Image 1: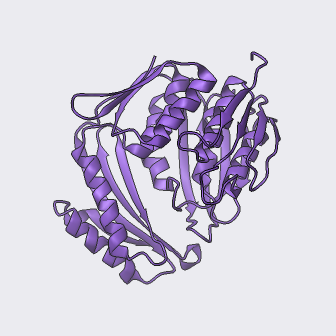
Image 2: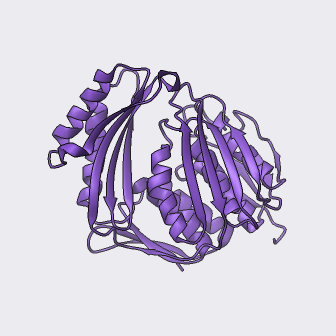
Image 3: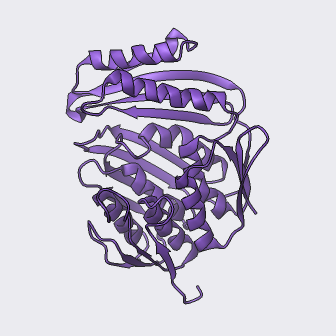
Length: 342
């Protein structure tokens, strides 16, 4: 540690909560303290939300870090990392705040800790503006497991927005992160479309799937399924579209919202999946965001992705601040973009 504090303007770039989560994770791994100002300044509700506070609190708990300014609505905080301690941890996010976003904050530090850890996370498992459990388990974690550590995640109970009340359990066996070259997704092994619902009429899910079937006309009948979970885990509904390839699985989701017709939600999700299937890139936009931290901390590697989002570019900027690593993203002849860590 050089004694200087990294200062981050939270209104720059994408300007969301990801800047706080990634900064905490990188601070714990590198030992670099930081201050972040103007947190989520451009959002309709600026400052830290409950799920961001829980994520930072989790970073403090696993390491004995010191954090000043941490409160719902706060726009400025200072974080001084401690030493990450593996162990058993239980974190509860109020209401439907995302369990997946809390996991993102503590996963990299615990992957590199001196022993195994077990996490119990309670809150939202399927809510907008956050990766659903299936994305974490089927898209993201298999790549982490190829890099050396072994992480398993179990969905114990669904937690839909706005009620929450879900539970996931995560077991982490740490290991150094090894570089990967993820430039080709490999042959397609299968596709599926599932509507998972609780405490709502089944016909909503049926309408959703019918529209997806129309939009994705070449998907086989066997790919479509309804999955009803106990009513007390709802009310809520999510559409999960999955394309399994030899080297990567893409999960596209659509979250039911009051006032948004099931058909419109299904059409949007289907268009996103079609965009991925027709591209050649390894990682969709959300996986690309998630891979920045592990690839940078591995000190090397590459992956191809679709057109970079502002979210991805901001994640790269934060990673450079803490590690000083050379990170490049360049458009390839086929239209995909190649992310490399030097």
